[in-house]
Amino acid sequence: IVATAHGILLMHNHPSGCSQPSDADIRCTRELSRAGQLLKIAVIDHIIVGRGCHTSLRELGIVTT
Image (cartoon, rainbow, N blue to C red; front, side, top):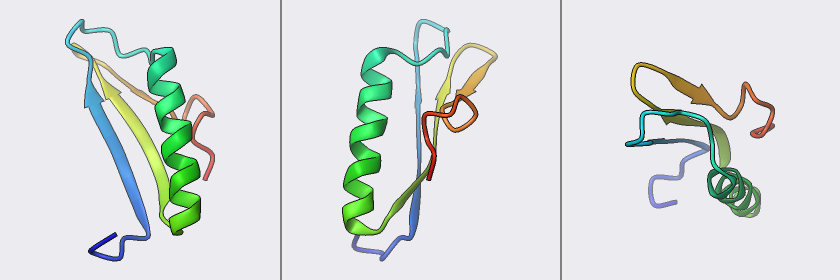
């Protein structure tokens, strides 16, 4: 907001090593996307990093902006 961003990329790791999104990850992504729409800041993707792997919520169809 301070830097007048037009988009953001969310990323976090799962210490368990599994990069599959949890229900909480999906819920949080959708809530942040809705908040971003109000602020005109697109959520470009949310990437979860595991052990030797990663999952893109955009590729899963969860992030659609």
